[in-house]
Length: 205
Image (cartoon, rainbow, N blue to C red):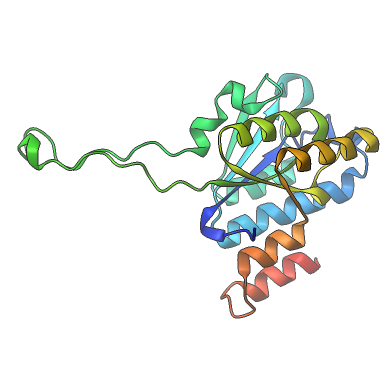
């Protein structure tokens, strides 16, 4: 399954100021998270970020939060390890559009019924800690019939073995394991894409 740009949403999990210093290979992981946020802004992919217990673990790393804001992204605070338990699903599934017309402007039989906004059913995910918050959120997204792609080079845990065990479990559950460059070039699909040069510069940075 290749990623479809128009069907994708980006979810960045718990890149927080008090957590990242303890994360294995945290500098490289954060650099790839930044690339994902920049690609999402460039290609207009809806972007969401979570923060686990921000009073305890701090807010999202400022340089990443700035990029999320530039992409018109939303940051979602939670206390449950799975963000689904605290209401993330409502952000990922757009509400129905309001019906056109009303009782004063049109007879009821002429009013158009409310329609759901087009759903983007593929969640491109990365984050920390891979074996806890990312894993639990991803498994619940799969249960809710989303396609889930895990960006492995933008994920980690405090202990490398925990991260790798999470990848094994996620793959067995049906998640796709990808890399930042896979995401970039599958979203683009062609060197003729208008954003190709800018995306290539981000990948090489």
